[in-house]
Image (cartoon, rainbow, N blue to C red; front, top):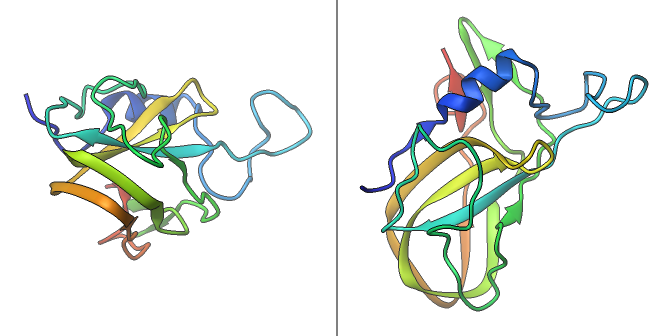
Length: 156
């Protein structure tokens, strides 16, 4: 089975349960009654041979890339933009691109898993792109415009 792009089904349920705090801290945290906190979101790269998709519930190192200057678990996502809405669509995009510097990832990869490391590594979404390898280069995944038509995460 191949990786497939999707907002993870478990994430859809978890947002209804209040288990994710994306963007600027506006809600009282689940662990403190006085201090709002934002969850730490991460992004990890996965091999073409992986099988991530809507059924992915949490980050796992299975099928994750490995190589020079790549750390298992991926990179921390800049999570400073508050979710918002326009019309009937709610949306959120990380406030900065995802970047890996001087990496060598010789085995083909084609997706990134965005997940909430604060909340037991719960999966948020799987985002696919063309099969890629890198030798001693930089990888930047540019984030889309944060609006109801283009945002990384859109719920309509």
